[in-house]
Picture 1 (cartoon, rainbow, N blue to C red):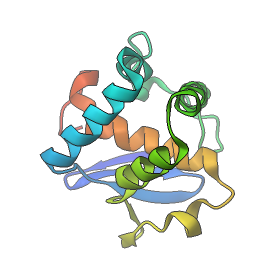
Picture 2: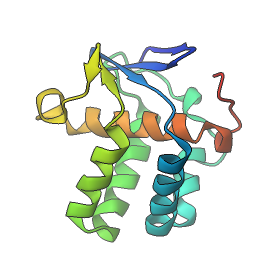
Picture 3: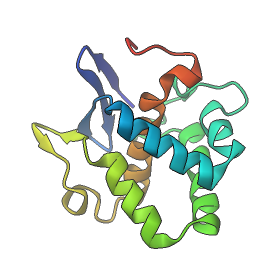
Picture 4: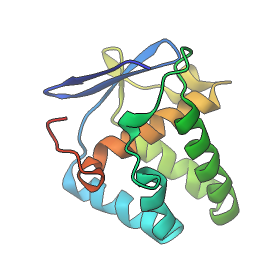
Length: 142
């Protein structure tokens, strides 16, 4: 998986598509953090930290996915399904991905991710790890 960091955000490539992730406004970041903590508790941080492994440790499998990200995404999906109202999960997934750019325009989830749920959740993972990079020992310049 290719990841380019730019001054104005971070570009990630997933499934042959490029996405630009930019930092959220503080209010949105706090709201999402509170929602994640409320619904996932301590496992929210464990999901991202993975016993000390930062997302940069993930090894590319050549198809845009990684063994580590697939395992973590599978874990969080199972927990999300068990803990969340499905409509609430959809609402927050849309909020989390709303500011992501696909090419030069805002992302169209139905057009881009229909039939590609793993890619959608991989992008969710990247957005959240980017937004909360300071918890992972990173900096906003990474």
